[in-house]
Image (cartoon, rainbow, N blue to C red; front, side, top):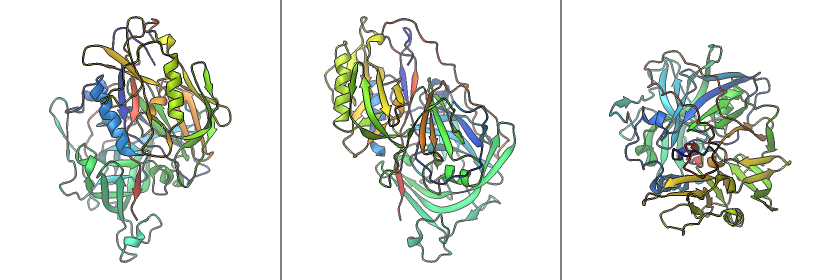
Length: 495
């Protein structure tokens, strides 16, 4: 976290998803990279609209983000070859979702697709009725027309029948030769996507400029309801564990190794890299995968808050699809109360409007060096330091408050390490070795490429400013850092 005496800290939430793929390819070395921006970052808001969203740095802003969180329920190795989408590796945040320009079909057509590690299926709006969002408005009032996938136009498109091994809804088929139906029900109230499965090519390229194509199965989404009627979702790319997930299909096709990383940098910037197995000097811990929770679940053997070490063992899901960290009792109370004991600033009373229980008033005497550190010891002994456990925002009376961004988990029976605890790290999800890796990173070491023309050029992404240098002052001031959060939705295919 970077402290600055002249600017306010802004925290940014992302949409994404991270779950484990069980398929693997033993002789693959390719990897894919995409740069991540959050919707509320200045560089993104110059291109895409933020109409109707709470002002950054306000209590309403963070309350809205946590509300979306509750709706979802749940440095690379230089020898690796990086590969990106054909349009380039840049992504941008739109209405709590992280999007990449993805080109599919023949001729290639671009889609602003949300990268989703909390679901499995990749789907695009297709043969849509009125439920599909067709336009996106920029801050300048310009309307961007979003593409709709039409299988009849793509010469490489083919149907997926009910007799396919990827058709999980065979019990809904009248005949094995019917089109395979799908229905994904997201846990955000009323949010779902329905349609049929199709197969087509996705266009990618290596860092050397070599074009890559891979046939993938995805959903032709004829109807999107709920959340997808409120935000301009032009498709979701599931990055989960199932055979139908994009990472699994890329690995089985020999396009990328069965591993990927997500990097969470400052100022709302980051990357996602398929095929990235991390580096030899990264820290690691094994996954604790169970049929009940087929996600990136790890074991924490103890944690430390300031000078206090808490000897307690529990499991937690590393979920980049969750904005902040959620802990069950007694872990929530143990962590937050020990944090509170180390803080000398005056705590404000718990307020109904505030999503966080432990918030403190910033005064001229506040000192960032006095804030307690938080770290976890993982199974195997590796230490995971938390760089950004707090957020800072303005109050209605012109003051400033910082909060410990941890929430009590009461709607599920599992712990979640949210993206706020992943800031300043490249997190590696190695599905071949079944380990979670992490290494401190500023996310500036990714290769960036530009791709060939698609049938319609997507809007260009604005340049990303460099992170501001660390201020040597010890005074606790508003922070000019945009940390990344991901709001996602655990989904399932209805059989």
